[in-house]
Amino acid sequence: MKNRSFRLGDGFFETLRVIHGSLHQWNAHYARAIACCEALAIDVPNVYSSDFLRNAIYKLLEKNGIKSGGRVRITFFREGEGTYKPETNRLGFVIEAKTLHQREFLVKDKGLSLDIFMDLKKSISRISPFKLLGNQVYIQAAIWAEANNLNDALIINTDNRVIEATSSNVFIVKNGAIHTPGVDSGCVGGVMRMAVINAAVRAGIPVFESEIDRNDITFADEVFLTNAVSGISWVG
Image (spheres, rainbow, N blue to C red):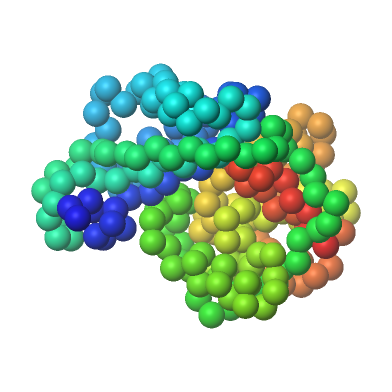
């Protein structure tokens, strides 16, 4: 196996939702992918334009018979061999697509159960806003949540601030205002996160990027998570 994503975790991924046959927030996902390539010093061939990748996804959706609701994952990686020092910085990718029976975002009747995972902390760096391969903080947090009969786990950074869940951004509502950790806290710069922020601003709801700790979670009026595939999930 010569693939650097398998051997070294040298890459990242994007997951996006297919709603009524269309790619939801595709432009935002593509922009984040290009930004991650720049952060990781991966060269993007000119042929890998937004239209090229989008058309490749639609061809796969057609081949897999996905006409309405679906989930797409694109794994991007640095091609070639080499050890830690790459032989090339050229971008490669693999697209996966599966059917989702829900054709649109739905809010569940029951809220999520969660707690804060304390065993590992996510570091803050120029690459922390991206969905990198092999991130054990999320993997171990998800295992811990399952072992403790929780739906999800909240992640903390090296400053002991709550920054996100295992696969979602976190928001709290307090006194009529929405608060969410800033990307400079180490959280992933989620596509749905930004969509919610923009929607709140258009609706005239105050939104603040601010530090969040355990007490903020405990005493919030509301807590909810956002994810590009599941949309908005409220916490019970």
